[in-house]
Structures are given as structure tokens and as C-alpha cells.
Image 1 (cartoon, helix red, strand yellow):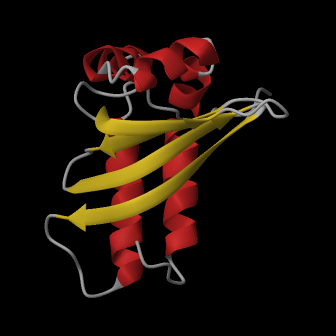
Image 2 (image 1 turned 180 degrees about the vertical axis):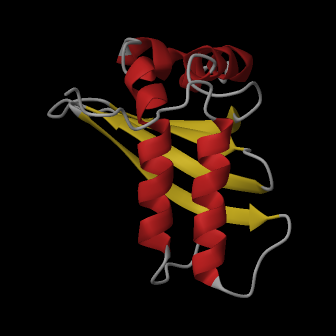
Length: 146
């Protein structure tokens, strides 16, 4: 995706939304991911992503995108890269999730809005609403105890 002034905000929205999924996926041993990626066991990878996502999102919202890679060197910790498709209502996000050491990151490759607005800020707000609606467990502000 060609980077623009609203790309960073959208990546932050997506990263925050899938943070719990990335946390679940980081519980899986890196060697298992490497083996599945190396032997192109896409169905198994899709099952792992689906299992991690089903705890937090409605079915079909977060999917394995049939691709991925890994970086493994003698002098560094492994890094796993998974292609993901996020499909909340009205929008499809194609992204790469990077799982490494103590952190995870997201890079959006492309966003497809079904009915895009001419205003990029409206599209970003729609993406935020759509991701929130797709969450399995909603978070609501709690009142302060008196």
C-alpha cells in the first residue's frame, strides 16, 4: 500500500484491534510456525489463526491470507510473518502480522472499502466502527465507583 498521512492511523487501529489475536498466536512455538510455513501447511496455519481469532472476533472476521514467511538466523531470534485478511462489515483489510521476540507488529498492504467516502477521515472512522462491531466481546467504559 502506498503510504499516506492516514495510513499510520489505520495501522494503529488495526494493530490495537488484533492485539489479543497476536497475543494468542505468540503462545505457539516459533518452530511450529516455521515448520508449517516451510511445508506450506496453509490449512493448519488457517486453523491456528481462526482458533486465536474466534475468542475475540465474530466468525470470519480474521482469516489467514494463505501466505507468510519467517526470518531465522543463527544470531537472532525468529520472526514470523503471517498474511492476514480482516473482513469486518463493509471493509476488507489485507495485512501482514509480524510476530517477533517480545513484540508484534502490523503492516497494511491494502484496504478495500465496499462503499468508500471521498473523505479519508470518514473512511478511517468507518474502519474503526467496523472493527469495533466485529469484536466478539465489546468493551464499554465502566462508571467510577462512589
